[in-house]
Length: 169
Image 1 (cartoon, rainbow, N blue to C red):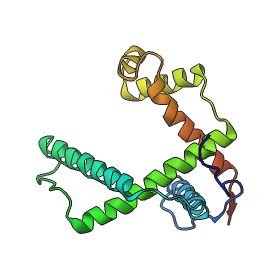
Image 2: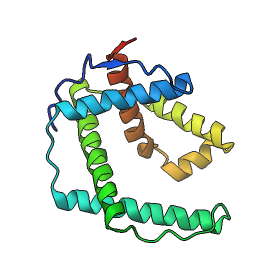
Image 3: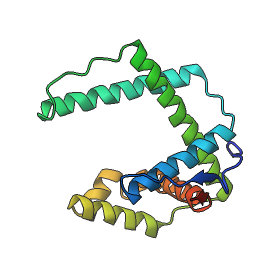
């Protein structure tokens, strides 16, 4: 069993009043809830792990920018980040790693599971959204759809903390 997560039920947040849309307001509330949970839980992550994650994020950004450049969506090359950019990436990496640990702890504590029916439904949703066959999705994700399982577990944890939050007007 992983970390014991504290203070993830009944998190109090204030509703965002001037959000562009309801969807944006919900996204901001979800982020505020997660931030409060992160603040309430002291999680130490070794610096070398943060550095490795930040480097990975920098490489992904570099690949994305190269792809967009090749696709004609932008006309500049993304250079490997400078020191100040890497510091921002390290902060982001640290938050991502802590969030992952927190969500894993909630998944374990609440004993969330994903059924084969849920996996099939999610795979069919992907197929419908991408206008491809379910078989193509399964070819990409694997016949048993294990690659989707983690995403669905994380969604369940995020929905759980949102549904159990106290959202004040």
